[in-house]
Image (tube, rainbow, N blue to C red; front, side, top):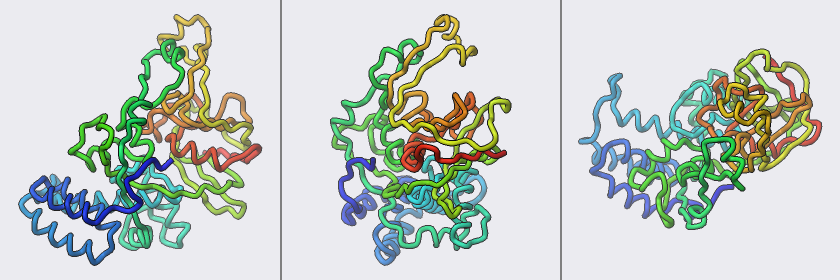
Length: 359
């Protein structure tokens, strides 16, 4: 799942060459490149490079609208990106790794703080940041794009009828594939690699990516789903949190079940049956006249790469081809997760795993 990397650890010579090459560039590019070095190369070398970066980047420093220097904003960006990456390694997901603090990242931070005996504020204060990043290495790595990855790209038709003719609904672009593989936002990958020919850099391109691996996924004793918090958590037998994933819930409150359920089926790479009677608002439903369509598996399948069916018929936990929408109220009743989180959760549950749904 981690994908091919040039090496397990960034090459210091490569990092220095990037630093030198981008000295004259705008601040965000330079400081983002420095993020690779600061987090992975050790404090002594990183400190010396930071001093050089500060001198070289003075001409590029300006003020943000709120009066803070852009260098301060850039430093905050790389710190948040590093924290999100380490949290993801611990199955505490803030959604997509994007270098920004939002409600989903704050929720993940709060779970981590609770588990480690810190005040559960959800704020990325200095003690929390230091503790999360303590001992962390290889926060970012380089992924080498391959010809095979290009060959695997897929067209994803717009209509249900056309989708039903496809043998597999794969990734449409290298950008989409890499963002999902490394749990990142597409915008973050563009910021980390502005020199590449997006959305489909050619085979052989080295892409700087966050590194949310390895991540252990132990078996869960139970799951809990919070409708108000829009999250799913996995617990061990002692009640400790094993995983925290943001999710989307039903738009219609009447379709939000509450109570005790259980897992009855768990499927990797599922197909999907489009029933026009369930989607009367879809303009294509009338033309189908009740005819159901089977949609092939793949990351752009409507339920993504995993399906966890619940004991309430028609309800389940599943992935999505649109991770940017997670946390919004938009489903017809099921609980949507980013594909990478759905895949993790799939490996953590089994038949009859209890699932508690609460307001």
